[in-house]
Image: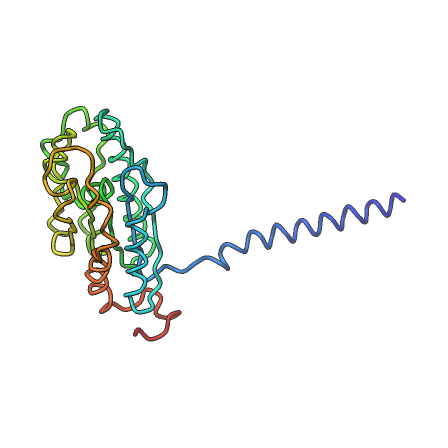
Length: 251
């Protein structure tokens, strides 16, 4: 009886050891290679965690236009708060997004240097993405914000970002009304940035802060996400795939 119990114990121990070994080996064996393209997108105010509706429409269009290249997506991790009345809290949620997006872009550039990055955002997320490209911390930023503002990304990171797509980016008037400095796209990113603003969109057309107009939700419906995806794809297609050995000849 005792011998049988010992045998069962040793058998269970052996099975557990094999399971642990297999489990430890799985991540390296199954790890995804670096994608050819990564879309880093910040959703709009109040949208559920993820890339949001406009972001998903843009991602889908990018995937359809990049000639079979692999496309990964990183949703910027931030609150996308709608509490515009608490200016410090609103600034903090935007800065959280800037820090998260910037850190992720830098990590991708370091870990997957051949991956081409498309940075984008909608509404408040467009402010986040725009600020991420800044070459310097704005001089006119309120003193109470300076303690938690991240430093700009290193200049060499711009070589990894092929396009910046901004939808309904808050206007200078809007940003002043919420106590924030205007969004200045960094000079290294300006030539590769497309800004989509529907004329009736009161977030980006210069109107004072108020209830967003219906036009603010129409970027996918009116084809502007497709147009921005074409802008990005035009800057991707001449490039060799990041995983050329895996993907075979480029199309």
